[in-house]
Amino acid sequence: MSTIRYVLICCFVQLYATAVQSQKQANVWYFPDQSGLDFSSGEAVPLDDGILPWSEGCSSICDSSGQLLMYANPTTVWNRNHQIMPYGDGLLGGNSSTQGCLIVPKPSSDHIFYVFTLDEFQHDLENGLRYSLVDMCCDDGFGCVMFEQKNILILEDAGEKLAATYHSNGVDIWILSREHHSNEFHAFLITESGIQNSVVSAIGWDNDQNLVANAIGQMKISPDGSKVAMAVSNQMPNVIQLFDFDNTTGIVSNMVDLPTPTNTGSAYGVAFSPDNSKLYIQGMPPTGLDQYDISSGVASEIIDSQHHVTWNGPYGGTGLQLANNGKIYVCQPINIGVIHSPNLAGDACNFEGNAITSNSIYSLPSFIDNFQYTNTVTNCDVGLSSNAEEEITLFPNPASDQFTINIPKDFLDGEIQIRNSVGATMERMMVKGRKQIQYNLTNYSSGVYYIQVRNSSHQLSQKVIVE
Image (tube, rainbow, N blue to C red; front, side, top):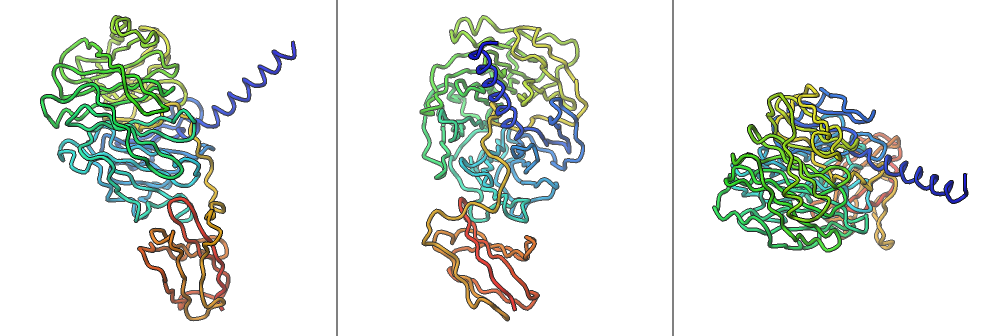
């Protein structure tokens, strides 16, 4: 074997190993109704221990080892033990929202996550697009929603469409949604510093009928971040549109109107093949499942490539979701179908309807569809504030009856945890703007305790001795 060939093979093996490792964040799915799938083996193994009740939009995320961190629907966040996180209920999404929930990691963090929520058309989309922050270092590593960073509004009148992809720099993340009573896409860039102002692209369907029930239907960004597709349901004539997406600037452009085999207004599910060459659209009967070859980038060729995927059974069918094993999973209430070879043209895509017995309803969990997540395994021993002048001061120390904590100004919207010498949480509370907090030690035995103050990006620690 030549030296060059050997080096190339070694590089390929290393890249493949890195890719597989970074895809484990999508190993575990939980979705309505009390169901799930485990992809740790490479194939979908049904789970029946979830407790996620009825909803449409939902999301799950694992760490880079494949351990479940949390799952959520538009109103609630559960930890890996299937318990509602502290402050994890009362999110202002709508349970009937198509893509009402999406979890993404904060760039350059292994313990802070955004949970985005969308309202539902039945509520007139009143609560819009919002986010809440989850800190996985809270509650002994089981996570909590940060009370002061909960239900933050970033887009009013947002429809039920929500997708994400990585910026071309491979670190920052784009969140894409649509203002429903307009034709505007809003792309929000998430960086280490937070969420930036949206990039607005006015293009495509503009809801000229001024309806609210047609807010439903999925929108997806292709795995390579170059295309956006959306289906508008409860809308006649049918609307399925394909666009270019610039993952450097956030701009949406070059619309292509796609045909459908029926005009029932039921187009709903959207998914791209893992090699970015095919687009799949699904709707309730008689719409069924359609494939489009988008590899040429030429509108007329894309339109002419439409193929109605053959299957002899009843379609059912709503949501579509690409998995980290390269297959697309198909909601067929109450079961799940599988497109086994979605990169292949026509019926060679090998669609198997009702392949998995599971209580799927409308949607499977939403993800960043290239699955190249950057969050790793949460490490709660790092992340001290970059401002070396900031520190927790507490007095007296040692203490016997009580002690007082002085809170640094950058942590006035944060959380305090008191842990014992083995790391168990003894007490937790939100700072809520208070510069000093006093603790009574009546119920504390003698020993060493650790005070941790956290905000959305940093933490400070200090030791206190109780006599």
